[in-house]
Image 1 (cartoon, rainbow, N blue to C red):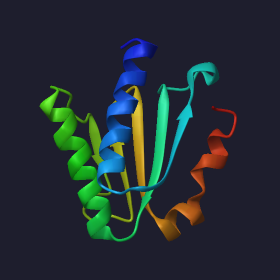
Image 2 (image 1 turned 135 degrees about the horizontal axis):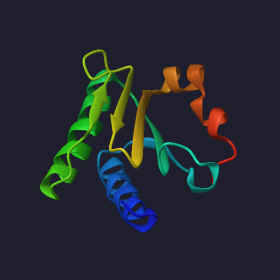
Image 3 (image 1 turned 90 degrees about the vertical axis):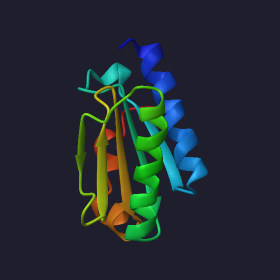
Length: 111
């Protein structure tokens, strides 16, 4: 996937996150960091049910476009759901867990 295609994918994911009322959406571009993925998208939800709903809508919208999630983690406990689309990785946190792990600081050099 080209970087431009990754950017389009990231924008599709952001639309789904916004439609499901995800909070504090942050996009981190890793293009200049030589990371394993082009983008990290981090957002928060208010409850386990909200996190699952966010994840479900992202998956549904992308599957409609023929894009499948390569790897999904954390759905059953829904404190931190990771959705791996290879070139874009989505982290969906409960608010308190996002604050605790603060993964944005790990990628602070990204844009």
